[in-house]
Image (cartoon, rainbow, N blue to C red; front, side):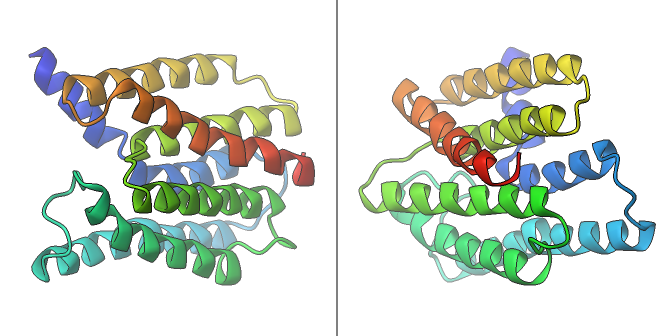
Length: 202
């Protein structure tokens, strides 16, 4: 029972979802007036580019035998998907989330881009930083920053996110997907870019 619970945590809080969750969280908390059609357009574009497109690309890569499983168990398997993800993030920054329109989300995605580039560099060096921890730590830092930026109390949400990150780390260890070092490095790879970029928008 515990095994299936921990395995489900890895899927429920999959790193593919974190960029979209950041956008949803922003629009649910921002005190600024943003027309509903704009919100819907942004959510639609981000959903297509960060979830639907990567899933389609995964099946393509699996067909041509560039990857063997969704887990990307080797450093070599990670390189092509990470390169494609870098290109997707650049596209989003150029075409979907402009600095002039929504600076908070622009810098959130810029942080994701830097985290992805770091993860790619580590994969080339044959080190598998936990992408689950990268995604959850980046989203966590963004949520904390938004609470300060908009002066809103989300202590309950932050506490829940800490519990979820603990659950994700436990899940990855239990499934033998990562060791402690890979989880810790993943946490900082996700957190630090968001923290550094706060200087530009907070």
